[in-house]
Image 1 (cartoon, rainbow, N blue to C red):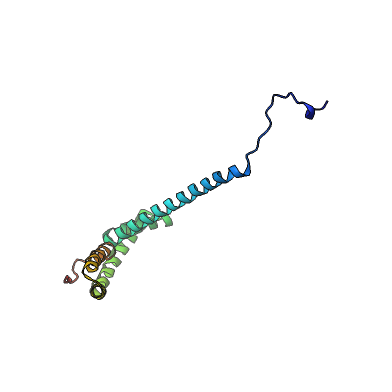
Image 2: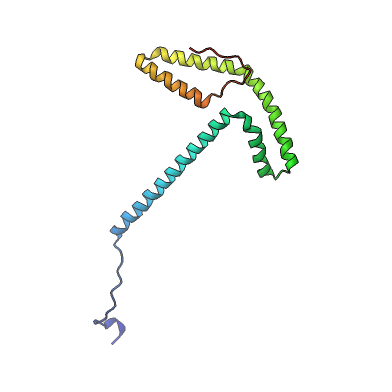
Length: 154
């Protein structure tokens, strides 16, 4: 009698999962993976947009942030980092002067866009448009440099 002929064996027969039972598990794993990927992408986008908006609205911190980033990436000494921060701060002053020159023209163009779009809308739409446009400007248009000419509101 060989080992395959044993009928009184107490060992359970090996079972295999049917292929139909694997699909829900694989599908659920895929859904969880995709949900995690979407959540990670959303958090990354929100974080990036917030950092970008902060940089737009707080240019005064740019020299320190840029020099710190360069110090990490280029392995700068403290003296090099300080010198680079001074260079960036000096150039930022020149960039501000350029903004003084062009910011009024940009604001004028944005005001034209606002007016032209508002002319196409009815009263209810115009109210919503005004709110959306102001939110856009607050988020993405940096304030005019301190000694730039003040613009007139509509």
